[in-house]
Amino acid sequence: MVEIYVRQNNVDQALRALKKKLQNEGILREMKARKHYEKPSEKRVREQAEAVRRARKLARKRAQIEGLLPSKKRRR
Image 1 (cartoon, rainbow, N blue to C red):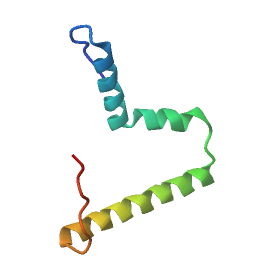
Image 2 (tube, helix red, strand yellow):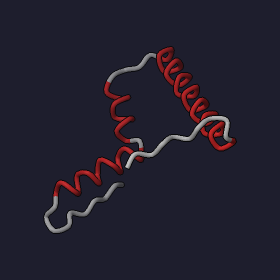
Image 3 (cartoon, rainbow, N blue to C red):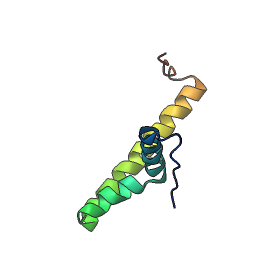
Image 4 (cartoon, helix red, strand yellow):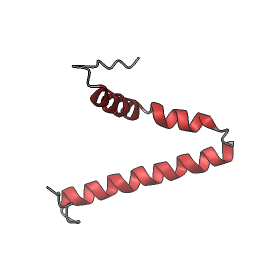
């Protein structure tokens, strides 16, 4: 259960915190997924694409750590 406290009547800040918690827990993604029926074949394709994306991201991070790729430049 997600709890957010409103401090000093600052509802905007509480709403931002709520959205952040929901996104971190994956609730927003699950709500979006349950909104419409997803065929098993579409689910399989989506999950495979997500796995490929995760694998590429991990490989990119490993290459950056090993110095094979330049690391991202941070903006200030």
